[in-house]
Length: 240
Image 1 (tube, rainbow, N blue to C red):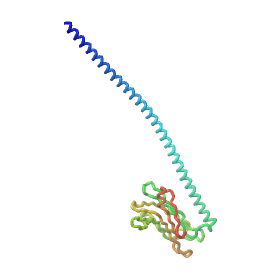
Image 2: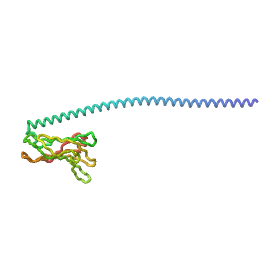
Image 3: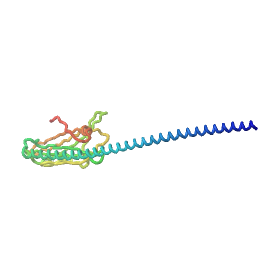
Image 4: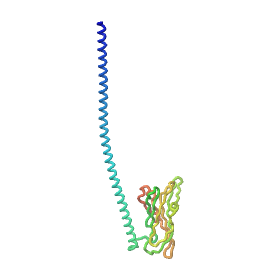
């Protein structure tokens, strides 16, 4: 009987020791989990603070971008306004020279200006051609005008001329005026052609007061496209 009591006590002590170690292992695991949770909470708080800072910086950058965009728009509009005023001033000066200083003007037929601007529709261009006549010996002029696009085929090294009348059915090649005449319209270039230059050729018919006259202007279309359609520069010709 005494031996049974001793065995029972041993079993009880071992059981209590096992329970105690089990409790300690569980508590240790619980402490580890709680520590991980605290670390995750700290990481979450840190990420939230960093996200808030990034959001504030993004809003600041967007605000600066909007301000610069508005400033750019204002400057662009101001530049357009100044260009219009400059064109108007140049036009007034030109007409002034025609009136008070005709000796400074080119005699006979003259291509006063040729401009091209982007239309709202993508790939479409608006053009404006102004023909004038100098004051000296001024009489009514009539003739024909051609605007041609030089299409270069690099593979075959062949230059083809595409007339504006093929691109703009409303284009009228005949002109007749005494002071000046303005031709306006629009055109769309086919995607398969590669235009490098535009030729503006005006032929005035012979009259009882003047001989026949031919005026030719060449414009750099390739450079015009490269500078995003800002300035269509006139190229020197052999006659110049």
